[in-house]
Amino acid sequence: MLCLSVARNEVHEDDPLFCARFNPNYQNWYLLGMCNEIGHLNVYNTKRAEVNVIKLSTSICFHKNAIFDFAWCPDIDLKVLIASADESISYSDVETGKTLSTFLGHRGSVRAISWCKENPSLFTSAGRDGHLLVWDLRRSERTAAIIVQNAHLDLKKKNGLTQPICAVFHRCQRYVLSAGYAESGIRVWDLRKIRLVSRSHCRPSAVWPYSPFETDRWQRQYGFTSISSDPTNKFVFVPCTDGTIYQYSALRLDPEPINRFVGATIRTYYVYPTVCPFAPFLACGSENGQTLIWNYEKWNSPMYTMDGHRVGVCSVSWNIYGQLVTCSDDPSWRIWAPCWDAKLVKENRDYCSVRQLKFDSDRIVRIRMKTYRFRSRDQLAGTTPEGHRGRAASKSTKLITVNLESRRALTLDKLFGNPPNSSNTLQASNINLPDSSESMLLSSMEECPGSSQSTASRPRSVRRCRTSILDYFTRS
Image (cartoon, rainbow, N blue to C red):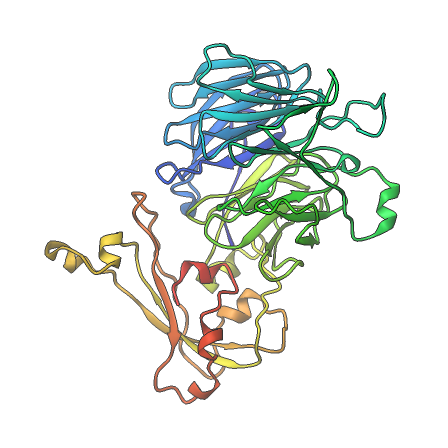
């Protein structure tokens, strides 16, 4: 990963950033939204982030108090839901800067908000008052359709204290997940079967208890900070202040975690991880200023570690093009992207530190890398019109040697450096940003034919394995 740009809040430099999120839609993948403590939502254009040019598209003050969370609308429209500390939720249009609707119902700061991907008219909010509210944009009254009071109240105690809710995830039209303090667990709510225990609170459909590695961690008070999901909504990732990110199955709703990812230092309730939209990678910030990346299909220890921030990293977000934004408490933020050029990495050594590249075999492999420019889906499918065949993507072929020692951590310089006694180098390729949603990157990695070391190449079953982020920008 290479740091493309370093920036600060241009409008209010000293105001902390709470949350940063890229627009999930393909048409607006380059729009980056950031909310701060004084109620401003800043939207940046990251199309030219590779040349350190980031434009502030708009900065609108939707609230007069802090904005803890916001969510882009799943539709193409540039609409956002904004959760504020003034106990209100605003449904606003970023393009015009107008607030379309205001939702009132919480008795405390609105801490988290989540859209329903199956139905863009539904969303769920949770606040420090301990209430869970489900809203419907199609209702004429701006009141909650479903109200779950004291959602994280201790069911074993008659007069338990109301616990705040820090995270909410609207998985589908039926299920909603909420999380707060670790002792209350992660609670699953079936919206079709809300059971009233009393007038004050309801009973959840299931409770996922806090399952730490070490039993002595029960002696301290921990809590869950947020809930993130993969693009298919099969898994949910819940970071905890004990320094562990718990992975659960959102399909089976199993109370036991599938995996636990360690390595990060999480001490605040404002840590928002992100999942790569095109590869099985999970990114999360740490209190020591690092950003950690895990491959959640293989290892529970960090696969990459990125340095650059001086203080803790609170929020990270990934877009569909591969750009990764990391926000710290400075407040400052950086945009990262996968890099194929070792020279650029050496020049930006202060901003880039990628470690722990792991491989599965002890071999020396000669790889031919063909780097293509962006092409449309018709060109990739072989149905390119006659008039456009002359625009076939140019390619550059270079040979590199990778020494794969037994599960040894390799740095990026060793991986993409010049092989010994060889004049072949890996040159940088000019990668243009896509102009439409139908553009994509095609690269291929194949064994070098006629090589004297072809006998040491990977088996066919291993050669197609993708182990790093760069592999997901290529097609084997």
